Length: 216
Length: 205
Image (cartoon, rainbow over the protein chains, first blue to last red):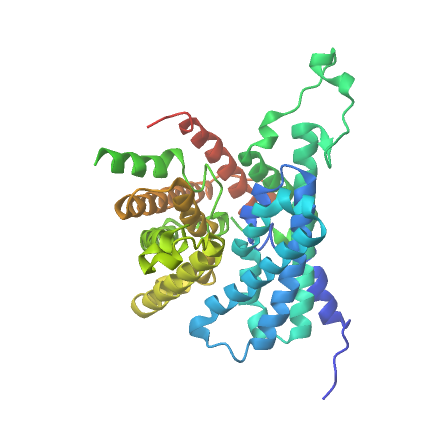
């Protein structure tokens, strides 16, 4: 039996595929709700990406270890218990070490339970693969998810509020009320614009990567 | 009676799960390719919501709320289990979804095949957990109101997903730029539908 090295070509593909060819948000259509709810500003988007990163990779490994023990009839409940436990863990860790951030984010952390990207990867990958592969799959998907989240939040915060991470980046003297020519685009803060931003991102991604184009 | 009609209309149009709160997006976008499958998905969501919202209402009233356990005796009067509501709600939802999955698999294998991966995902459809949490937040007076609210938000989701599927069936005949075909244009359509639905927001019932 030949042992596959951790960074063989196949395993590297598991890690890099979700970044572009198989991105959770733009190709697999998973985890949209949170992508819309928390991308008004960059900071919550970054913390959300990190939390999902932890929950997804650990949940993938745990479910993959248990995959032969879980009866398929009750697998959803088992998966949800694993996810909910990890989310509570993240919540408690945030509360203990960065209390200010956790206070700001408590609702968003709870949202991870219903983030379908985690459930989707557990169902589609971890249930049928070894823990090592499941871990790489989790890492890759979390990166792909976080990448889109941060790009969307970057544009929404920049165009909607003129700030990045809460710091003003558009010079104040540009604004109309200070005698300039610029006004923030209030539309960008509303949820529909998150959808349209993601739509435009998909457009750009598929212009570069033409094999993703759908037939109709 | 009037109160019930108000709750229903409000849940369907003014506080539409998809367009006003953007909940349940994943299944909404992925299962809306044809009207037929979207009707199946919408129906499943209405069904699951109509069962889980009243069930969670009972759970909330008799177990989780502060002082809800007083029917057990004097000693339990001060018990407040509301911190458990996430886990309890999701457990109820997950078991109900598993039940619906078994029923559909048994009686309609074709529908089961076309809903595929997304049937288990109803469990993590944020619209379902979201409705239960809204039910908790708005503190409906009795189980009838809670049921009507569940039915209403389910119907709102049904309306949204069937509407999107109908638009997507038509747009197949249009000349959409290649890279935007499929998912890209769907996001943009949803965004525009969302902007349209925002006009309901000012209505007070």
